[in-house]
Length: 479
Image (cartoon, rainbow, N blue to C red):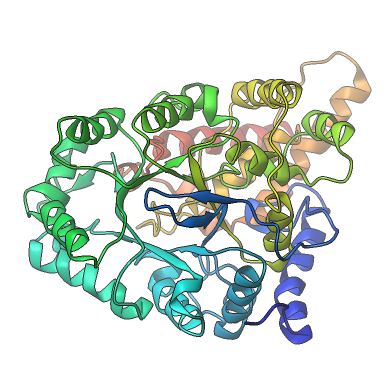
């Protein structure tokens, strides 16, 4: 087993992060350019990873590797770039993770533009099968994959790509959202659930595969309508199905403030509570809320740095994400080695939050939730836009500038304060043009609503595009 990255691979993977971090320091930048901010330095322990026990008594690392952002040959994240993945870099990252106690790797057919499962399979096949757990999903989003035949084909193809004869964890991918049927008619969340998993008999088929040992743990990942979440748990209460694990969005903002950010969301305190009550192990996604909790406003950063000057901003979110006892693993999509190292430090071992620290994070969450940010987690399910709009980058730029105080009105009477706001608005416009090419900006949205049904956060994307474009136009007029 490789314990350390080679010098060449370290420089290759870390170099891209350094460039991104340097760019972020230049001013208000797109969220895609801030992936290396807030990383602490220090020893990376090899044998202190916190482990949690699943329903079979197996030890699972609290840090799970989310395989949706592996580096491409250019060093950028494979989630954003339609490029070949850098397999050497992926191999080195996986080796480093396993060498430092990470043993769960989570992927799905769409990740990294459809390349993730294949790449994960290559990287993990170089290790003994009992050294890792692999997790993937039935991502039958398109009506063309809703038939029993096509869904079964997708399931078996995942095992082929991953080079395994059984799956440690398998999930119904992203239940709770809406989809359009073969005729383009939008289905409600319950109709979508039935078409994808019940009408075609796929859930029964997967339960049979679990009985045969081809799937060791069967669960679902949840986004969207709470009625679907409650319905699937009700089926377990009635003894019709049982769930070995469930993947939810969970962080210190979503814990109590998710509905403030988006009325269609559900607080993760409720989701976690319902799962813990049934002793269902919990997988966590979005511990950083799409990276936003690693790029907080100055007030929040000051609070956290006063408490622990050496800890990274991101580490506080990860400590919270692993704080509840029924959390089995916290998934993090780590493109750069610095992020992998920082997360390993945080969970080697995990240090439970004190009551005082929980109150501090609640204060930060309360302030954060009352900003009018857009609850985009950069999942990119809305992409590609038929009209070429770069939806996630627009939202990331707006949110980051808002958190930095660059999206404000002339609320003060002091002339210097007004000059500062004027400079901030100019920075917003200049960096908007740098982050998003003009032909991909919000003013090109025609409100076709193609993206709305794809968004697991339930964002009215055309409405937000109009709001951002109105703001941009108002800034241009005021300059």
